Image (cartoon, rainbow, N blue to C red; front, side, top):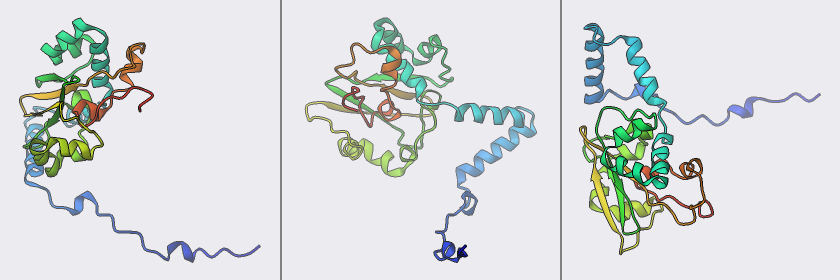
Length: 215
């Protein structure tokens, strides 16, 4: 048997990957840590309760928002209730949308909606899950309100010149979700099949929902 030389496995050094801890805490991270410590010291919330809340938030996915969209596409009465009050409509389907008011904005063949938070990263986490990194980036927050069509094009979303693009700025007191335009060719699909077409990006408005043959 020929001896195998393991030295070549280590000839090229691994690229340096900094740990999160290598970077100093930002002002807001320091403030968040201080608030958490104060709440636990005052017995307003226990460490276990705080951990459980974090785990619950982390477990949320775009599937909740997709379920609302599919129901609205197939049930006009539910769509009216969704447009009037997202939180209450979500509760009808057993979905906890949280206590922060949410507003649904409908995209149509003549109107395309897109969501941004220009100040930070306000986002309907309970319906869509954790925000993607690009949503929190300064570039997306600044450019989307100034040149939305260009930003959408960078996501691969071409909006015709005769279609209005409307940008909605989320805040700590009011957040948005998009009701995407239902694509042609999906008339015979079930709610579950429709929901499978709805993506996180279409709920934010940086993409459109495509029929199965287009996906």
